Length: 373
Ligand code: MG
Image (cartoon, rainbow, N blue to C red; front, top):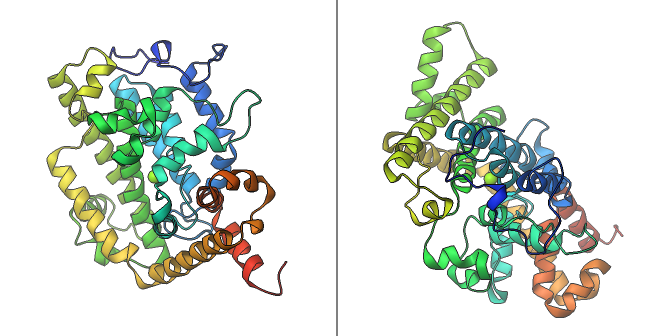
């Protein structure tokens, strides 16, 4: 482990776990958190959850699992350069999408709509719920009993209404404070990862083209530089080399700008980081280019009619499942029946959110097709 700066999250001065445990041997507290996350059931389910493309659409598209690994890779590079805690960034990155429903944002929107009268559904809050409550792996406690700093990073967003019910972990949303720099890194590493892999996956799927993308500054700038250096390069290698350079540019910009912001703010302790303005950030120019790319992806990929058709099906599957269980809770699997007694809608949301894409499709068939059992 490299030398940590004074304002890094430090496992030795962690705010600790909800249930006291003996310190780990041979690894730090944050490494233990990362290991617990990797061994969780929710983590393995990420393999069969959609990022943009539904799992059965092709073998080479990103899933939430490969996405999370890419986020961790980018985040760790940034953390290492800035002298921050790589292990914490890795733990937060690997856990950041654990609460996502099947079928990406379409599934999340549908479930939130179903839960409207029952407290709503927020995927960040659900990720925290997965590690705090839903994972059943330890004899002594529910959930994974992660450190405060890891949980703080996982809870990226939260409505003030929900924050008020969360105690210590929700306080920063009420006081309008920031999380650790490690959590801020994981957040922006997420953005770098999905913008770039959605370009790559979008091109691979044929839903967007290089010609269309040439209208986007950051893409065309890097494409031109690759073409100038390698005039005969075409197809996948041209795309990969361009995307690789884009990621590089974003990572070095993020590192450089953050270094400058940290130097200006000159924090001495992690709590000063929490009180400061965000210190992990892109430069204004790159920020603007990222916005342009996001806007392009939104218009041309996320709203592409083929994606919209799948999203529409996904919403119907999630809504049908939710309504069926709400109408007759006996349809729920036994392990969710006990939870259903105290809060049926929440138990259904937990069950549905935990489903992989293909499990949700199968469960829908089991409930609604008379030929299936
Ligand atoms: Mg993500």
